[in-house]
Length: 172
Image (tube, helix red, strand yellow):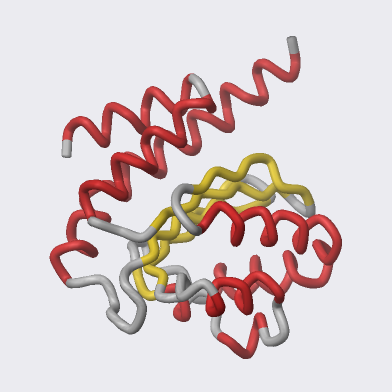
């Protein structure tokens, strides 16, 4: 577990390290893929994915960039009302009624990657989402969710730190 925590903080300082951190998470949880994206207002600040979720993440970024206003506001409002402070099945954050007709979810279902456990982190004027895909038709076991929840505070701090460092780099 400590190696994953170290990888998250290394990724906060060097964005290129997020992929290694996600791959470590995949190995620890035997997942089919994981993804992290951070959106600020109506733009995507960063998106990283492993396994089959790379294609799904690319589609999500494209969708957010083209339909950002309506979709981002709906997602932000939903997440604000339904915050859990931990990892839950992704339907808890993004129910089918919110994303009906979404090409990203359709692609995830087609690739059998739609069985996600996720956490949403509120960041200034936006949100960050970390999602992990388990085997089709099998929600992540309680032990896996427990491991993720042990990492939640570290992921939240690393993400906030990465955003802070990114703003500092942008100013200079």
